[in-house]
Length: 81
Image (cartoon, rainbow, N blue to C red; front, top):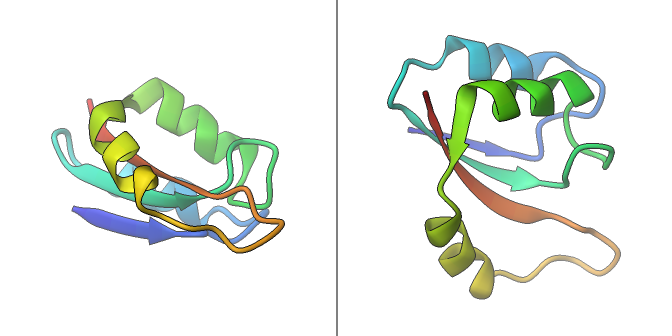
């Protein structure tokens, strides 16, 4: 399991982590969506192509989470295909 919190904007770190993960591994990600202040657009493209979203689990996590004012971060739980 990988916990990735606010991967740096405009750096390849998040992509490298996603590519290094093995099939079946789970990523718990906190940050903004594509186009926000988290990671790169390519990172989100990798997530869309290579991971399945576990939305039921993420919904439960987000229900009890609070974001700082002005931030649009959400928790995402994904499993590598």
